[in-house]
Length: 195
Image (cartoon, rainbow, N blue to C red; front, side, top):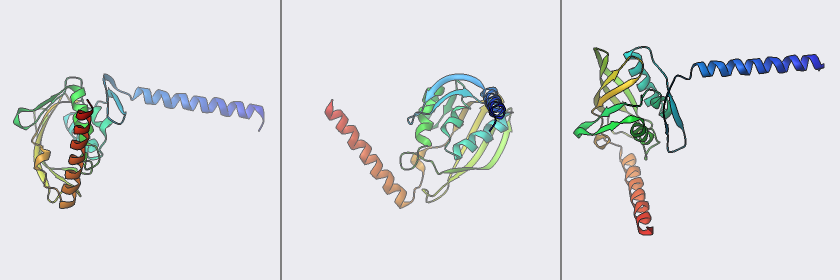
């Protein structure tokens, strides 16, 4: 290949690479406090959605995909999740830890559950949703409700009735979970004995 064609191809490849990099940087979003998952994924950027409905829909999409980075891209630094019995998860660090476990494969987590909207209404920018969760590990669908409060770009706060202790698992899934929990307890005891 003549030298001019090689140089032209090199310049073109460089220009395309720089163009693609510029596009990626333009889509990065707003900076957020960095959070790292157990497997080393880092989330330090918020990706804005267009309205409270889009925020809720993105949340369900990335939750069903077990996409930890996608979930974290919705949560500003001061995010809050309110659960039953007065339990509150506050801030990106705590939210990252909670969903790091949630999106892990079974039996350590609940990846594989699919959340589907049953009913939804909007009240002043808050999406109020009745949902159903189903998946191979469940013997029956699990029903719940959430309220997602958004500034129209990010998920600022939400209230959820979800309680993993109320999932009715298949016999096989329950046996796998019981074995996993026993293994975790044994490892914890060994670590305590070593100290």
